[in-house]
Image (cartoon, rainbow, N blue to C red):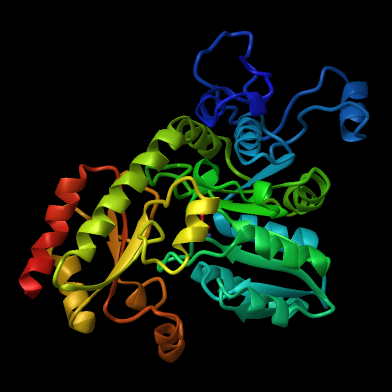
Length: 397
Ligand SMILES: *Cc1c(COP(=O)(O)O)cnc(C)c1O
């Protein structure tokens, strides 16, 4: 089964079956095509391919069959017309900006986005005359107020890292479209299994495939999903010219990751909710941030636009940085690393790692306190994860 209408199938089936053209060898698992160029039958055929009169592969900076399978499958899962795969999540964001913006354009961006995304805007795109204003993610009025006559793009992540803040995507898309602005959503934390931003009105979806799409912390990659013109031509045009394309090896790993994505996302969400509820009841924990908790400020919106709450949560402990670090250091099998979306649970102290370069006052104002610990909940038995965290928490008394 290769060519079928993905809208008629469950995502679980699409994630396993869609988009592959089996070769004459009859292989069952998808083949990898590690080739930089492709061969033509004649000079005339080469001329026709280069001239665009005949479709087909020319060079792997433009197209590659393994990469195409990953792109087609992810596009089907997100409900998008086009998907372009990139070498990393950051190059997906870069390709989007370079493909769609020009000097003099303005972007409104959520304050709660991946740290390197703000570095890309502030240190690099700014040099080329693209201006950015940062706003509070869930405050729709602040997006509207920040919009200027030259605003071309809204950019956000929902839920955000590490506090799990959520924005109403449909409402934000409405505000954007009334002003002729495009909405790009970094869907890294939910993946299309838990949230489909295009269905809610977003125009562009960004992925760091490095995270849940891989699922086992092996490869870097990214993707942009959206319309045939905007993503399939404009973003793709930058990518094939500048070259931060995805390697076929990594595309193959992500294809294998997609096969289990629906099962994994539900398991990550179940484990995280279970852990969040347990943390709430622990006397050493002063706050738990997880959109699946009923007292989370955007719980109602999260419940409406997501079919699960994802695998990332954070919590605060009494006693500031020393207490937070002691909880992290008391764990025995949790990995002290900033990656997320892995079968292995990871634990970090955002204030001194992922958000360490943010001005301390701004950081505190955003809620990233010294007492905050982030856990990207993996797929180990939740009772064991709990026990590993309890070691340090119980010692805090
Ligand atoms: C990791 C991450 C990125 C960047 O992806 P890379 O693959 O590391 O380049 C972008 N957005 C979010 C939300 C991320 O978590």
